Amino acid sequence: MSTISTPHHLLDQAKRRLRPTVSNIPGMGVLESWLLNHEWKQLTLAEPPPSSGLKPVIGDPGLPLVGHLIELFRGGPDYVLRLYQNHGPLIYFHGSPAPAVLAIGPDATEAIYTNRNKDFSQRGWELLIGPFFERGLSLLEFDEHRSHRRIMQQEFTRARLSDYVAHIDRVATRVVAEDWVVDDARFLLHPAMKPLGLDIALVVFMGRETGADHKRIAKVHRAFAATTGAGEAILRFSAPPFKWWRGLRGRKVLEEYFAAAVRERRGVDGADMLGSLCHAEDEDGNRFTDTDIVNHMIFLMMAAVDAVTLTVTAMGYRLAAHPEWQERARDESARLGDGPLDIEALDKLETLDLVMNETLRLDTPLPFSLRQTIRDTDLLGHYLPGGVNVMTWPSVNHRLPELWTDPKDFDPDRFIEPRSEHKRHRYAFAPWGGGAHKCIGMGLGQLEVKTVMHRVLRRYRLELPHPNYRARWDYGGVPVPTDGMPIVLRSLRR
Image: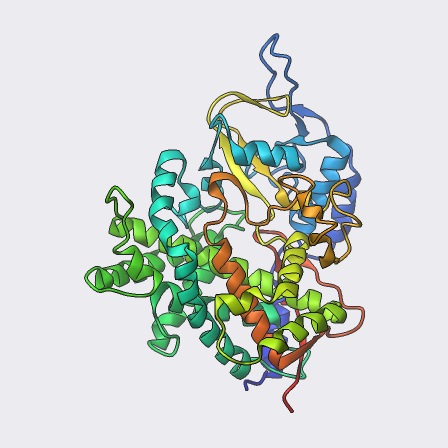
């Protein structure tokens, strides 16, 4: 069992508090309050064509240079929910660095995700993550996306997922038992989950055991951290030591790592995802190029690690805050015992399914989605010119009182009959996206989350660091806990 060094912990906490973000700079709370109550000059995105009967999209510029990023980064979906309730489903965000139309609510989400007339492209993502996740699956569109997804889908069948569960379980069992620290409020769940998620991904996706080539794997860990963090950058130019520059360097490290791995695996059969992708083809014989595989592996691993890390972190917090649900989930895990897991065993953990869904509703790992209009079009009766970035917020749908009873409450029973509140609208609940670009790894991610949580519940009781503790999230990119999410683990095996 690892231990925690007090000097290391104090240094970590100091870095979290002193790292300049809109969440921790002194006075930001006061400024946020002023911004939320300030009356801004209204601007029109574009005048609709005469006689079209369409309404213009209205908004405001916010502060110079940063627009409304302060409110957005601090409040996340709660801020966007406020906009929706005060201004309706479409709002023009004029401010820098990324002017966009916010398209909020389940009807807007459905129109964009179904994209019946192909008016919305994936190019909205390019400004945010394009340089770091170039030509990843979610950045491709239409026929090309469909073709790549058809080849890749073979890796996410139930038979393939069944093979992956054993590897996930083996890594999770070892790390949770050997590396996590008991009886210590200094233990931070989020930074503990991040390397576990990447270790699992390296085994499942690459067939690389974490104990081998430790120095090289550590370099890959750092490169992923720099690459995923770069999307948060406000100053977007390549100069040290800024995030954008670090992200571009991280991307180069990952390209070299995966390119070398593809060269090694092209002529060798493998049970991991990389080995399979090197030989996968669709019914017409189409296969991925080496460059395709490198791009897809970087994107898939980033998405898998981030989604699982955030979901397990948030579930740990919710279970610690609601011990009655923790005990209910533990009782089901106890019936499985400590034997090796498979999909059939994981299917029996129904309480973890409910807790996971309710956690995803409240703490959605990717709270928004980006698109760009290809041509002049309309959305919910509003005029959108071509070339406009559109940001939809499924996480706001998860907070709407017209769809969810007491939406701020943690209430996993809302997902079962007779309530089934998630069925009140097709996009009332959409933590994994929707339409043609719905997360291809959703099933794998859910299995990984349940595997990790099963192993945690078999060994530990989770407690909050103090009775009044409340999690606080930074929404500068994907949501992360501002303090690392301290959780006290109490051993059940003494």
